[in-house]
Length: 339
Image: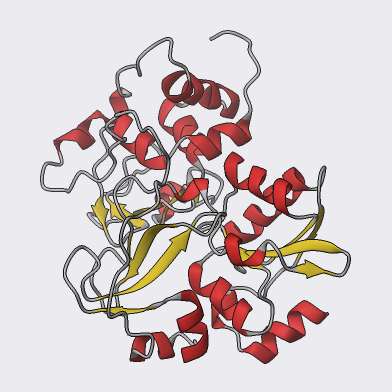
């Protein structure tokens, strides 16, 4: 393999773990919108148990195997990112794994090579649903084109909305509520998503029971091209600068807004795309990162902070272990943000 430079950050941001799974013919069972599960396909897995120990979070682009035999073979590391995954499967160094991913998915000069032999048997798991498919490759003339309709009869007073700690006023402001009509969002709590111009581009639908997927978005919607709530938040000044609080999820943003901090946006995940970075650099002068209090959230905050600090003032706030902003009361949010 040629001795060329490879940007790990670009690899992890632009290559989805679903594409990697599909490349290796790994079939996993979908648990919800962002979670996949199945038997571990890694060569480090020596346990004979039939338990589905291999889990994938597609929103965070990470994986883990809960098997003790698998983690023991990797110095007790349960999981990692896509580069780690390829390095294990290919039995290669991290750098060589990154180069392979670049050649397979980010280079137009050659098609992906054949799957590695040690995971080839996964293709025979015909009873599992195929969930790791790349986009069809059809050209799009416009990303996240504005919708030509709005959903009617959305109930902002639904009990589920209240159970998430939102007041009727907050739910009405964001247009969030239960949709009883027909279509793909029927029977879900819908969350309108707008671009930075304020144009409605999609609805996310949150299941109110055990229905999967937990969140549903329209086919072709690219969350990496938008920051949730930016159109409301970008014109609010904090001191002598325009600043934003950046969180992971929809309900995180709504709870922060409700606590009296309307200058908040959500990444819809814990990674920052190039387009989201451009939007932040274009519209604000400072950013406060308030991501989830877990390993992925903290890693995401550090990575994002390192990228933004060259052009913006950045502050990172660490939440207690296992804590998410949407789980906090308004008083708790105020206490954290005023500290």
